[in-house]
Structures are given as structure tokens and as C-alpha cells.
Amino acid sequence: MSAAASNGIKFEFSEDRHEYTVNGEVVPSVTQILTESGYSNYADLEAMMPAVLERKRQLGKLVHQAIHFYNENDLDEETQVKPYPIIEARLNGYKAFEAATGYKPLVNEGRQIAEAYGMKFAMCFDSIGLCHGKPPYWLVDIKNASGQPQRSWAIQTAAYALGQKFLPKIPYRAFTRVIVQLFDDGTFRLFSSNDQNSKIFGRDDFAVWQAALCLAIDKRNYKL
Image 1 (cartoon, rainbow, N blue to C red):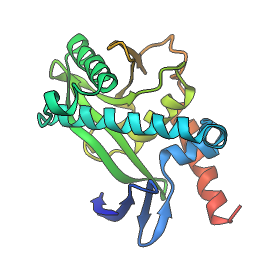
Image 2 (tube, rainbow, N blue to C red):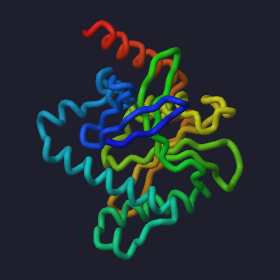
Image 3 (cartoon, one colour):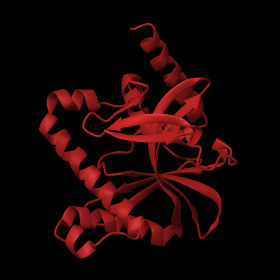
Image 4 (spheres, rainbow, N blue to C red):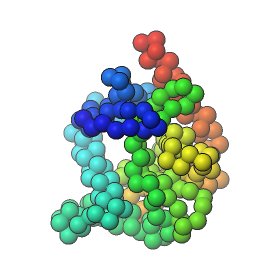
């Protein structure tokens, strides 16, 4: 259990339960809310293939850690990455993304309690940064899923943009929301909210997130 503060709100985070609490009260996370809204099938996968899903979770955690420490210039690749080919390949995919776009993070991993219209939710985005040092700001989320892109990814990044307070003077709609999907062969695929032909991002992403949040909070308030 770790303690932290966000926007003046003190909270605790349990890594084992992946649970956020404020004054002992559980605050739903973005992922939990999307699952409850039917945008994620993690619950079904957990019931059918718990071992497979746990392996994917652990892989995702290790890849995120490698990218985090790489961005912090605190990664010993010889000992921490090279012995693990899959992690090395996906880190290489992330490096290829940075090289292709000129992206550099300014905020590296933002875990916080956010609030919208008086409703609290917990979130942890991967990074916010700039390409070649120039606006617009990119809010980047890393995906280790090797399957098809998911609609939930766009709504997830909408929640992150709406809730982030690290750059309070930047309107949430001004962020370019970016998904970087990493693969085992060291390549990546990029999805951007600026793509007018996107199959996952849409004009209503923020409205959909707010509706999902309202329903999730209402169900908790009335113990449904």
C-alpha cells in the first residue's frame, strides 16, 4: 500500500488489489468503470483464462516499467531488459515510436485521483509530452495487447485527458490523445485522436466517458 496526494486529495493505492482509496473509501478506476460499462471483457477473460490473463498483466507491467525507467534515464538495459526478449522487443517498439514522431515525455506516469462534476475517479496515464518540443501536447497510452484495437482505448484516454491536472492551463480537448500499440517483433502501431478516419476515436469520446462515470457512481451510491 502506497500513499500519495493528487490535486490536494490524499489517497492510497494497493498494488496487490489495484485499488485506490480516499479516507478508506474505494474510488473506482477508469479501467473498472469501463469494464462495468461493457467496454472491456476482462471479467470474462478472468473467468475463462485466469492464468493467461495474469501472464498478460505481468508482461504489461514489466514492459511499462521498462519504458518508465527508460524515460527516466534510469534503465540498465544489459541486465534489466536484454535477458528478456519480449520486453526488449517491445521497448524497441517504443523507441521506434519516439524516433518516428520526435516524442519526448514531460510528465512520466501520472497516478492520481481525478474529479469531474463532483465525481471522483482514479487514473494512471503513461505520459504527457511534446513532439520535437512543440505543441500540441500529446497524452500517450501504451498498449501491450497484440490483438485488434479497442473502442475502450479512446474512452480511456478521454478520461485521462479530462482528469489530468499536471498541465492545468491546457484544456482537455486540446490534447492529442495517442495510443501506441507494441508488438513482439519490435514494431508499433499508432492511433491518434487527430485521425478523422479513426476506427476507435470519435467526437463523443468525452461525453461517453462522462456518461459511464455517472452510471458507475450512481450504482455505487445506491448499492446496485
